[in-house]
Length: 333
Image 1: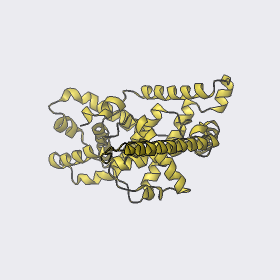
Image 2: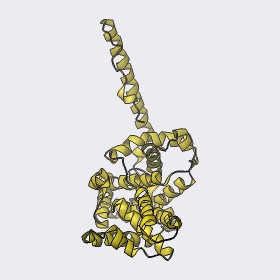
Image 3: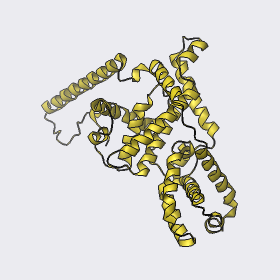
Image 4: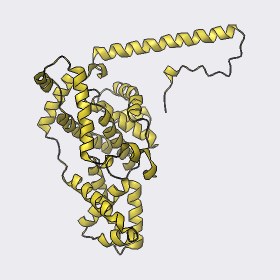
């Protein structure tokens, strides 16, 4: 249940200001660490501001949406919702200058597929990616554990899709509306747009679902006010003001979506390439050297593990039941 979930307890925020403050904090932290020797003017010229990061992330949210839309085999909506949650959560704790959004985006979708049991292999997954697919596979797999760590391993996501089905069944049962299924296109369009807002980080899935249903009903010239006030909350009218305000805010957030200007995005992309953390850039020498050292360290562990196995065997111990798997080589499926 959402009311008892980690999503509500740890990842649902009260105001947009609270989210903005978290994002500014990550921006300031990155700049303080990587621009310690710069003047304020140099920092402003070199690094992305918090507002610039937010604008760029909005562009990558659009790309995430399009990637999932074109995905083969067709991706269920709840998987898309889970990927968006992961992406938004990650950048509350990290700067886009530290971890490039194009790399985290793909990792979020891949992890969402696994968590939601939308069974595609890594080979099938990267077949949907343009460019160097071997490189894409390496990036996704190397970022997967990082992503889970930054999500604090709270991977279960409650999306609005299930409450939407509940509302439609209830409307069929307790309303006089003819063919409530005709609301579905409007509902799906509305939900797609909520993914481009902060609504998933602020409102319960049922609140977002009801906002989508009411929005779609208004598009079809249907009025569900009496259904909400009498059927849904007839015996709990004290909770109605909170619900009405939540629905109003969600609809307002969807209505005021602004698409990032393309020329501005191009400028920020170039700026990001110059100021991003090269230790996390797969194309940089620093990154390649770090990966090489990590693999060499793993090889050393393998040698040590083999030596340990030989020594205990020489002591005539029965080690057939021991788990001697090297943790450094374990993967999480």
